[in-house]
Length: 142
Image 1 (cartoon, one colour):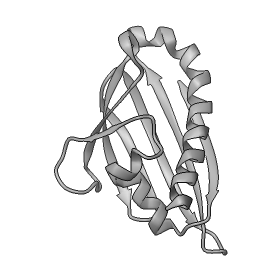
Image 2 (tube, helix red, strand yellow):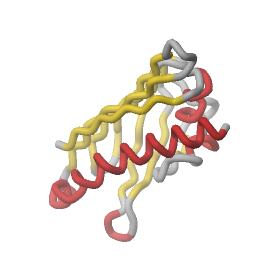
Image 3 (tube, helix red, strand yellow):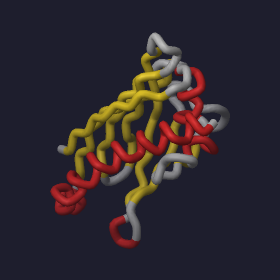
Image 4 (cartoon, helix red, strand yellow):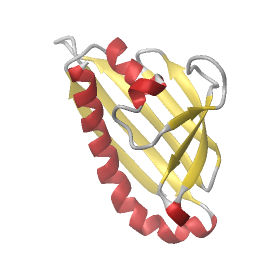
């Protein structure tokens, strides 16, 4: 199992930051993992999305179901795919009107995918930190 966690401070309030987690167009500005909705309407608790990462023979598509607490938390858990993924983003307002955004999660590789887990583990931690930095930049650019 791979565990990751990181945190960043963003100079915008949680209600602005949150939109970059749940709106597909804004999520695409900072994430390398494209999000495709499987359920209609805006993302809410119980919504299902599909994400694909990797390339070539190491390409994985994972179905995720979300739990949403608007402007406070977005969590997800996989329901399909070769990797069990549980993660969450937590937004906490700061005294200066900004947001402390933290993320944490676990990935469990199944079947033959377990063979690449040691390699992927190193990439996941640094990749998740870089994504939060890109998210910070995208939100602060507005």
